[in-house]
Length: 460
Image 1 (tube, helix red, strand yellow):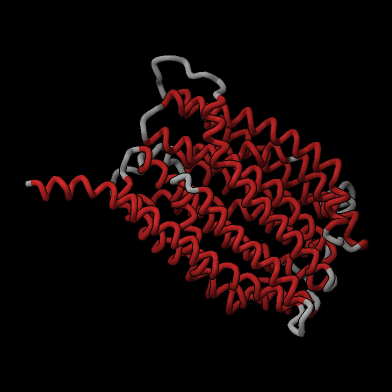
Image 2 (cartoon, helix red, strand yellow):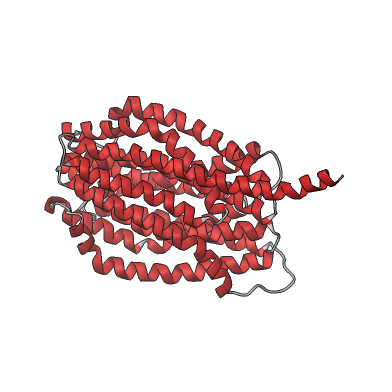
């Protein structure tokens, strides 16, 4: 069901719109968590290390898919809010064509240079073959990753967050079952273990992608316009790219930063790698979930800007902040006090290094989820208003601080603990900047809207 986000109480509107988005990303993350869980439980600690090692590289590809998602979503939201349905249809088809070309280029480059990427992050020889196998299969699934992300961005732009949630819930649960099936009953076919979980994910992502695209087609076929919409527009591609390219660069550099951090972590051995692999999946579950809620806030912002309701955006910021903090509370408490138990979910017989690393990482970062949540709400507002320069500044500040501090502190007496301390420092500084940019822009925008009214009252 499509929903107009420009009417109604912002607290109620955002809650009804964003909660299904939050649920969707929980199930989206279950894909990667399921791979790690099955690899660690049914194959072994080295398999978990291989999946976690490859995961940092897969985030580069996800960055491009996410950029296509957010670029399409923001522009379609603005056009939907302005009731420009013909241009909205053209924006969707333009994104689908451009995303296909970009995906093909990335697949070619990924398959050619996967070995070099794994060497770049100092992948240990004992997990190198398994890491490459998992990564190559993942690259083959990129069309599904791209088009599913674009489809969910379209649904979100139209205020429909329930449809992608239902797709992901079914697909993720099926993925868990197929992971186990492929690594146990078909272990004679998938002899490396990690190839079984990779192919299971490939199949489930493919099914959810095809279903999502069918529903997108049906939704847009029901939107009647007076004349046929063009299939492609360079002008709209330019507008989409204005949002997409900074988002891709942001996510890509974050991924490269994570790869640098991963290369530092790899120097501490397989045990630390496995512990980090388990705990960072749990951490990414929270961060990606909050980012997705921030994307929903971007849709809220874009629709209201398209409808000329800038003052309402400020009400949305306060509502969004309440929402993300409520979501953070149980997760932060769980991670802080039950980190060891959660890490054990991924490992059948964890070494002391793996268990200690995972629990320590979660204890350090969990209290700061409230801080980064505020950043992601403000980032959502900045993206929805197409303030990409400010958005990039906050993101790169966080990234550069985390990478620099991880490398610097890891060679001190702190050892691997110093790497984990880089997260809260980067988050805190970037949050201060992001909230500052949001308040400066939208306070001025509200003042500009209110000044004609004040002048009118004064003249009376």
